Image (cartoon, rainbow, N blue to C red; front, side, top):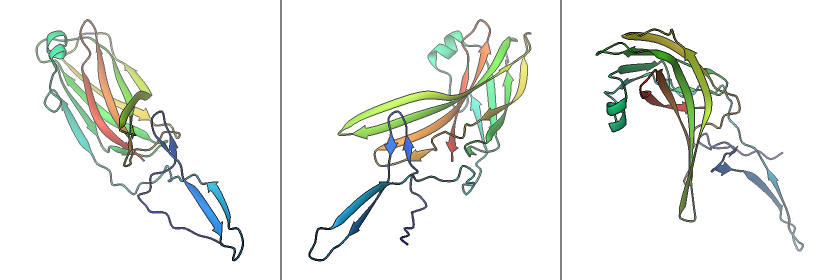
Length: 201
């Protein structure tokens, strides 16, 4: 029986759009006065989707205080302040990322048609001096709001993570990261967005 202890920090096997991690075990028989026998077997490396060894990291992100308003937000977006509260930014695959949103329109009421929560995956890889990136939306949850102008809006949200998500990981030549984008669909104005980095395990 052969046994090999794997490092705890070893990235698990993955196959993304711009990043791929594959492991193989090579077994060699050293035959005296004969030709050595070598056999290679690909071995998938995985961590439990219920791994909670990473401590929760609660966070609060404010807009525009933490992110700042860009030029187009100032020109075409409503005067708004948003706060996103997350009890944790570390979420196992298959679990639900829950949070709370508080919105205020200090100048004049606005009509919010929906709150849209998106989990966005970003892949980055480097090979032979060339860099490549890929971004896609892994999950989208839309919470329809009441259709009346308001100066204050509070909403909770839940984003369920698929079991098949690639976990957050960083290697010498690649990375897979996630962020939660919480947007308001504001009628007749540019939609403001708050982005929060999250870790998928």
